[in-house]
Amino acid sequence: MTELEFPPDSIEAKVVEMIKTCYDPEIPVNIYELGLIYGVQVAREEERAAVHITMTLTSPACPVAGSLPPEVEQKIRAVPGITEARVEVVWEPPWNLSMMSEAAKLQLGIF
Image (cartoon, rainbow, N blue to C red; front, side, top):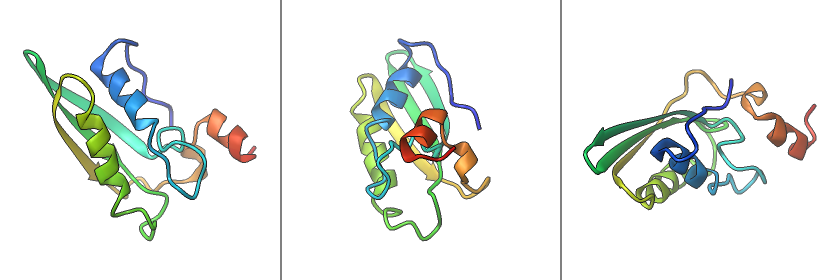
């Protein structure tokens, strides 16, 4: 899976930067680099923006399943201009190691 790319000053880029502050407590890599974020969609209306995040977890039995998505939503709401945020957890496609960025693989010693 390739990383999502957005213009540097866009709301999407600011959302991604905020997502990069979220970590799975068992893995010392942010959830974006882990490949847990499948989509960032922004709907704009004048000076307001609603964000919809599609994400997954490393497994359905992930111990942070109840706390990580709300944390992501809360942090996205803190981005200036965001008036609404929704995080949807999906299981398809299932997450696997190939979804991690090269930087995350290097940091975790996975080659």
